[in-house]
View 1 (cartoon, helix red, strand yellow):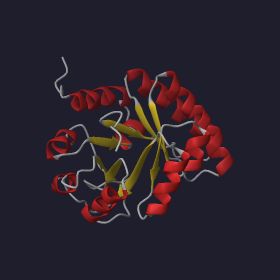
View 2: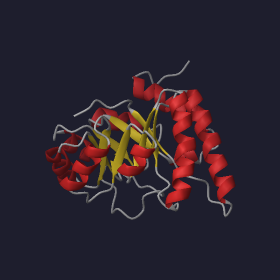
View 3: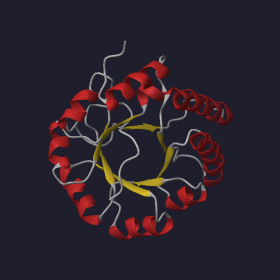
Length: 218
């Protein structure tokens, strides 16, 4: 089991626009600002894109993360992660031990994470030997509406008892993040406030302060 690169994982999301070039440009501009603010772990999702378009955008994302000596995790595609020379892959819920083994083969030195939506799923992931699991949705979330009711922070405590590092995902805000860490989460994953918020850079700095254990900014 590898150590996590950071306690804050930023999940990418393109803006809702019919122009793919504008959406890509806005995403890259947002990442530039977040990386400059200190973000060092990025989960490149964008799984709705066609493979060629995702590869092109992924290369641009990877370049930016690399410049800041950050860690790039690619959602759902270990082969793409290897092609981008990413440092990790995040597999979807329901992945099998053979999926994990294939990911390990493609990224022998990389992080392998998986999505989980219940404590038993986290326990199964721990037995399979992955490096971490996101647990979601912890709170009601507009970004993850199809995964059942919110699990609450108590689920993080139960999931962490498996021995696997767990990352809280779903409805995470600067007000809720401290409670997730207190409950046993090794980190938090954030999309909406940092991808869509009007004050993304300031929000990023607050999340980073919380992750470092210094939530009160001067």
